[in-house]
Image 1 (cartoon, rainbow, N blue to C red):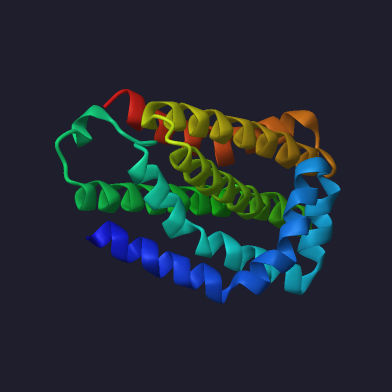
Image 2: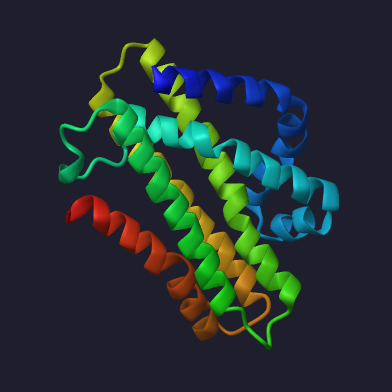
Length: 206
């Protein structure tokens, strides 16, 4: 019941913001192709704001999708009801975001251009929005075609890995435009690899 209510609420929110989402979507796709598009997007106050709104709007649909298709399903969650799993997944995702924000704050460089650093960090909003939309589309289409849930889950995990690797590439290119390769590697380790590694480890080990 809770799942259906939240899904319905998310649907209506997306409908209300559809004009905003459609307006910023071409810029999001451009960021997949060239790293400089992320700079251009952040340079526009309206596009940057719309991108952030879209990322926030996609949080609940993303968590609902992860719950529905068991994208995050460690052994200790076995036997927990759907509402409980949704609450846990949402809580873990929020904790993951807070950890990333904390790392971004403490690793904020003194020598790098603040705008470049902000653009690199904000690029996560862009790629998260794209990932959430792709997962929603994949789940909808494959479910309509009556594909097994295990196949859908596998496809979603591969899509997630591909988008994440592309995100890492674009974020590294943004950093390299303003600092050395070694510094870029350190920033990626602190801002991305450590938080994401902790999330993946929690799903595999526990």
